[in-house]
Image 1 (tube, rainbow, N blue to C red):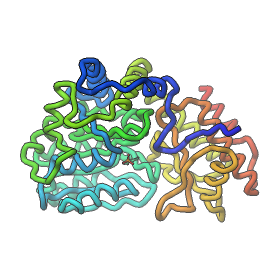
Image 2 (image 1 turned 135 degrees about the vertical axis):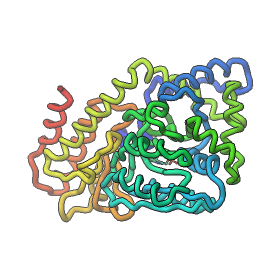
Image 3 (image 1 turned 90 degrees about the vertical axis):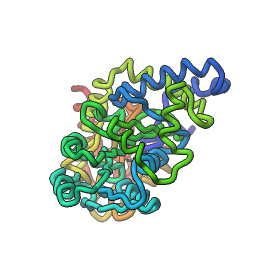
Image 4 (image 1 turned 45 degrees about the horizontal axis):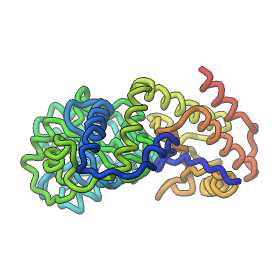
Length: 379
Ligand SMILES: *Cc1c(COP(=O)(O)O)cnc(C)c1O
């Protein structure tokens, strides 16, 4: 028998109820029966993003919405300020490069969060920076950046917008767009939204919509203005991922039922249990100062290749976690805890690490992590 556990920061596990919803015969997206589905999804997305404005839906992975955020707000040669603290910060920079946006990069040591004062300094030095681009949660390092503090700074600059990659933030911890003044917030379906990959979302503030009016970068599929017009009629410009949107309706219903506050608390508790469990077995956290509640990055024991832990979990235990990328490759492993996760999934993850370490000959008190996790989850 092979019972699989998917504990990665995307794709994440999906509720059987949602899977069944998506297995129903497909319907036509221009037929009347699609309208109430889209109406409900629009409302649910506004609730999730904390905005009165429309949240646009695209049939792509999350990166599509990141690209659209750039191409719909900026023009060739515009200046942007990019926070690069890992793989996904790098991606903002690469998108800027692809479109001829002049990106000034704040490099942050992997495992650390950006200091908002650096952003203020850069904006004061170069007032013609049109957009600041950050990750709410840098998935490659397990860091949470101080989005609210950054938004508090950027909102004082009339000609600058804040673009936030919330792909492992939305649905994990609070990112209320309107309240905090986030100008563009993007996410994807396969993370905290508990769906298969294939949907990307973008919410825009009134300030960001003004930038759209003057943006001159090329765009076609990811044309926000065209999609805004369509979504107001409960449509998308091109064929939507119908089954995923039907799944999304189910997910948003369950999120509303649980309530955002409870969802955030659940993630906080699961993340804390994971972190404390790793410490209890003597492992060091990669991002101890500003950890994300979406994913925990952990150093492998001194002298052990982290890839071996990941491989043992996958090949021997059918538990999929992830390793580190680039400079963190071989050094860290990452346990995700976002989306369709409850306390028992954390026990699975922690025990898998313990089984792996024991089998790989690492000395530690077997069971100490699981015990610690249970104590925290019982609180
Ligand atoms: C997963 C992820 C992405 C990329 O999303 P894709 O769906 O693979 O395009 C971007 N940013 C962050 C922070 C992510 O975690």
